[in-house]
Image (cartoon, rainbow, N blue to C red; front, side, top):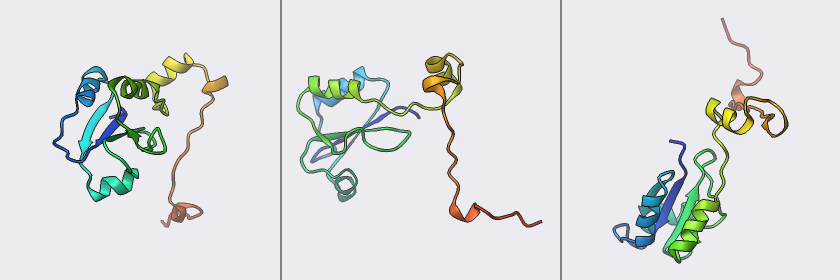
Length: 126
């Protein structure tokens, strides 16, 4: 799915935080997940304090902020979710919506193909 991910890190994954439930109900455009303080979560997201959250861009798989944000209040959490901007998914619908079908100005996109280094400069054997 192309929806942004919101990962909540708490000391116990079973802990229920009302700000998160309220945001999940309001932001149908995001996926929400809650994890505990397992070593992989601490290492992956560089968590220093809890409860914290990370908003992840599905296209780049990078967090919107460099570090996890502390979960203070619903108002600040909601504002962070609204302010997070992500790389738009490149498809026909987004092109029509953003560019109205024109390949000029800010819509002069370039496609990048990721190829393993071993595949460059080799000819296919017949």
